[in-house]
Image 1 (spheres, helix red, strand yellow):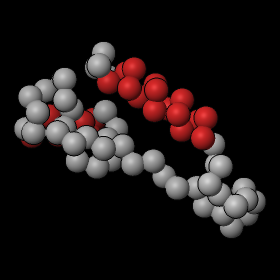
Image 2: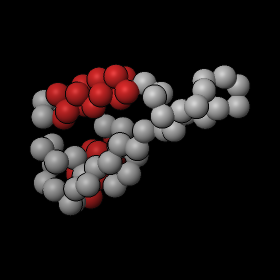
Image 3: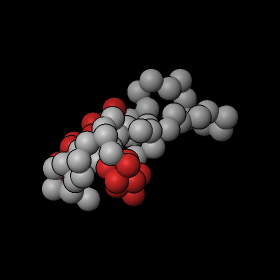
Length: 67
C-alpha cells in the first residue's frame, strides 16, 4: 500500500470503528451489517498515473471495490 493511502485508510478504519452500529436497531439474529464500499475515483492516485488502466488495476490490488 502506498505511503499516501495508508494514513487515509487508517483514519477511515478508525472512523468506521468509532461509529460502530449506532444506526442499526439491534445486533441479534436477522440483522444485517452494511458493507463498506471503498472507492477509487481515479484509480490508485499517487501510485500510478490517474485514470489509466494500470491505475485501476493497482486500485483493485489495494482492495478498492468501486472504480
